[in-house]
Image (cartoon, one colour):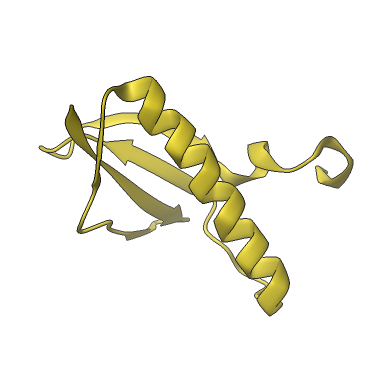
Length: 81
């Protein structure tokens, strides 16, 4: 088990995940990031928010980047540009 953090990046601006989430491994963290990206996009659509973050950055407890999930990659194919 480890603590993973899911920071939001929009251009040069980063919103830090201060809490993190305990997960068994990186594949579990990547799955969690995909679910979080879908939730963020759904909320943005429901609320009519025009600007959303572009990427979820997965880091470990010391802040080392482990992976990224571009929010556009979780859109259904028909909605992708």
